[in-house]
Amino acid sequence: MIEVTDLRVTFGHGADIVAAVQGVSFAVREGESFGLVGESGSGKSTVLRAVVGLNHDWTGSIAVAGAAQSRRREKGFFKSCQMVFQDPYGSLHPRHTIDRILAEPIAIHGLRDADARIDRVLRDVGLGPQFRFRYPHQLSGGQRQRVAIARALVLEPRVLLLDEPTSALDVSVQAEILNLLKRLRAEHALTYVLVSHNLAVVATMCDRLAVMNRGRIVEEMDVESLRRGAAREDYTRQLLRASQGYDRAAADSFKDFA
Amino acid sequence: MSDKALLEVENLRISFPTRTGVTQAVRGVSFTVGREKLGIVGESGSGKSMTGRAILRLVPPPGVVTADKLSFQGEDLLILPEKRLRGIRGRRISMVMQDPKFSLNPVMTIGAQIAEAYRVHSSAGKAEAKRRALEMLEAVRIRNPERVYGLYPHEVSGGMGQRIMIAMMLIPNPDLLIADEPTSALDVTVQMQVLAIMDELCSSRGMGMIFVSHDLNLVASFCDRILIMYAGRVVETCRASELHAAKHPYTRGLLDSLPRLDDTRAELPVLARDPSWLEG
Image (cartoon, rainbow over all chains, first blue to last red):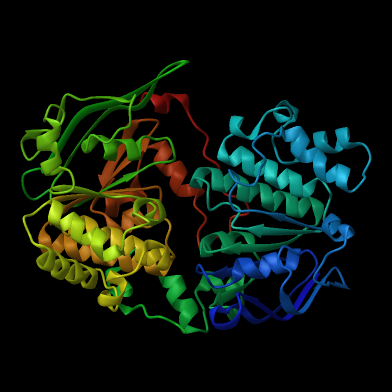
C-alpha cells in the first residue's frame, strides 16, 4: 500500500543544513498497521509529513496505493490518504462548527450527499448528530480528536496516517480513542501508519514497527518480538527499558546513540 | 515517613467563582509530606496542579483558597504576610513547572537566570553566584556547563531546558520541591535521566518532593507514596509499591486502561465513571 525507498529530507541551506531523514525505506501492506517509533528529532513525523505531501523537499521515492508520488500531490491523492494530527486543540478551526469542518473536505472533492456523509461519519466515530453544530471549544480533548478522525474519514480514504493521535489526551480517554481507531480499521479495512514515542501504544495498535533514531531506521520488528522484548539493537533495548518505568540503575547506564 | 512532616495540609479547598456559579477545583484535600517523594496522580482537571500551586499561594485570582491547616515547618502559609512568604517561596519550597519553553526567560542567558535565582535568595556576590550556577549545571549533568551558561533558552533542547529549570530550582537548596509534570515533555530516556538527577538530590540532601503527574506507572516506579485525585478529591492513598493492589475502582480503571507492552487484549477497558466517586 505504501512503499518508501531511500527517503531523504533536509532542512536549511549551506552550513545550517539539517538532514532530518537520511535514507529511510519501508513498505506497508494493504490493511496493515505499521508503527514508527522514536524519540523527538528522530525524523518519524517528518517521514509521515513527506508521505502525505505536507513536506515538498524530499528525495527518494514514495508510492501510495501503487502510484508513485511526485513532490506536489494531485487532489485525488488526498481522497485515498488522510492524516490525523497530534494536537486536537490546534488542528480544528476554532471558529468553524463541526459541521463546517466536516463539510469542507466534501466540498473540495465535489462529493454529493454531504449531509448523509457527515451524519454517518459522526456516528462512526461515536459522537452522534447532537455534536454537529457545536464549536470545538465546546468539546473535550477526546471528543475533538474524534472530530479530527471523522474529518480524515469523511472522504473514505484507504490509508490513515496518525501522528501521535493520543499523546495529548488523558490515559482513560486514550484507551477510548485507541479502541475507536482499532474498530474503524477493522470495519473499513484501513491501512494505518502510526507515529508514536509510546511503545505500549504501538504494541496494542500495530502489526509491525520500525524504530528510528537520528533520521535512520535502526530496526524493523514485528509486534510479537516487541512484546517479548526481543530487540536486536542496543538502541531499541534502551528505549524498551526506559518505557518500563523509572529504574535508577538503568538511567545511569543510558548512553547516546549516534 | 521516618521523621516529622515538612508540610501539613488539611481540608484544602480551592474554588473559582464563574458566571455560572462557583467551580470547586479542589474539595477537601488532606495530606502530609515528609522527607520523601510523594506522587499526586490524576487526570486533567482533577485538581492536582492546583494543589501544588496552592502550597506556594500561586493560585491565580479569582481563585479562593481555604484550608483548616496549611503549614510548612510550623509556619502557616495561609496567613503569612507576602514579604515573609517570599522567603519561603523559591528559597525553602521551590517549584518546577511543566514546560521549559514557557517558564524560562527568553531574553536572558541561562547562566544569568540561574545565578539570579541564587543571588535573590542569598547574599552572594556575582562571582560566587556564577561559580555556584556552573556547579549546579554540572550537577544536573549538563556537559560543558561553561558553554551552556552563555546560551539563550531557544538554543537548547527540551530535555536540557528541563534540566536547567531543575538546576535553577535546586540552587537555593530547598527543603521541599514541587514538581508539576516535570518530565512529561521529555523523551523516555531523557525523562529517566532527569528523574535520576532529582532522585539523587532527594536522597543526598534529604529534600522532600511532591511529584505531580498523570503517568501512573512512572509515579509508581519513582515515588514512595501516591495520592490519587479525582474531581478535586483524594480518592485513594497508597504506597507506590502497592499501587498494583489499589482498591478504588477509579484507580483500577486507570490502571486497566493503560496500554501495555505485552498487550494482547483486543480492546482496552474504558473507564466507566461512577457518580458516587465524586463524593467518595
